[in-house]
Length: 155
Image (cartoon, rainbow, N blue to C red; front, side, top):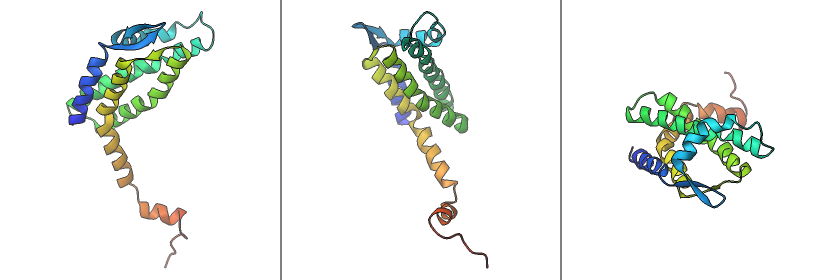
């Protein structure tokens, strides 16, 4: 749980630091977070690839919403299944969000690195436990007999 709280502090601080660079000017993390909630719907007048990039910024907003929900549930130690689903949502939303930065010609700064690192530290326990649960609940002996050996014979 210690990693969770380290990640929570990093996540919180990231909003105060410059997260992105646009034309040499740093954009604070809180501005990026707020903008990602609504700007993706305003791509009508843009040309490609900026239009697609702007639409993909929704994943940045999704990461924040999922991280807040995951953090609340983690602090209360509730709903491990929902926490795992939120952790996977966060993890799977990072690549399209990075693609949005590329398509919109934005460069990540220290706030962005702190934000992503904080999110990953916050969800790391649930991802690790979920992965272990996944493999523990599988009958690996049966799996290996199906794929690596001849099927078991009935006697």
